[in-house]
Structure formats: structure tokens, C-alpha cells
Length: 216
Image (cartoon, rainbow, N blue to C red):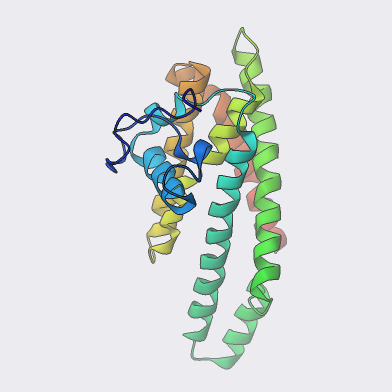
């Protein structure tokens, strides 16, 4: 455990200061909620130091569990915002149309389950595509486990979705920045290599997203 979490000042909650990954050793020393909070803030405010402590073939399930918690929070907040926005509409016909389009009449557990399943599948597909891209760029074979962990932990800034209006957009941009820093750090790339490997995957995801939106 000492190799996984080196915190010289465990009582100091300043985000970027201590190194290590508190989520790896949770619930020690302060419980699950504190470990989750500290991990999220260290990713957001000290991404290079946080991602430099990741190791391959270890703690992948921990990274996945962190991602699932973030995804559940996002799904719940998303459904609550959709219901709130729809209830503010004056025209009953518009309300009905919005409700049917956004499927907000679904039960919250079912909606959350579907959303989490979708984004988890997206996480694995994205990690696999990035693994293939970085294999083409790097001389040494990259570790899929490292790419997966970065993709999972890089979702932390998306927790800003709880802030109205600008929270989701800010979280998306911040998450992208943290994730790119993570790939650069764990794979020891320069910025040109990092962007060269990520750009095709990002463009493919945007294209597929547009296709889905058109179908809806």
C-alpha cells in the first residue's frame, strides 16, 4: 500500500499538495467519502502529480468503481435537471412533447442504470481505441490498463454538473484537459504525440454522437 499511496501530509486537504491516489487505499484512513473527495480534487487541481502515481495491472477495478460513482451522480443530476426544466414550461403540449422526447417519465433507477451502462461501454470502447492509436505512435507497447485508468479517473471534473447552466460545460472541458494530461503523463509523451493519438478518437466520437442525435 505504501507504493500506491504516499501522503506525507494526510491532514492537509489542499488539493494539489499530497501525491498518491487516496481511492486506492479507501476506506483507510478516513473513509470512502473523504477518499472520493480527495481523489477528485487531486485529479482536478493536481493532475500531473496524481496520474504519475498510477501503475499498470493494478487497481483497475478501483478506477472503474470511481468512474461508476461519477456516472451515477451525473445521471441523477441530469434527470433532475430535465424534470425541472420540463416542469417550468407553460404550454402543456410542449411539456408532453419534451417529456416523451427526453424519457423523463422513466423511473430514476431505470434511467440511471441505462445511462451508467452506456457510459461504461463508452469508457471501454474509448480506452481500446486510444490503446490502438498510441500503439501506432509509441515504439514501446503502451499499457491498456494505464489508458483505462486515465480515462476513468479523468471523469472527475464532470462532477461540476451539479452547478446550474455552466457546470456541465465547464466540467466537460476540464475533464478533457485532465484526461489529456493523464495520457501524456502515464505514457511519457510530448503534447504533439498526445494530441495525435487522441484527436482521431475524439473526432470519431463526435461523429457518432451527431449521428445518434440526428436519429433521435
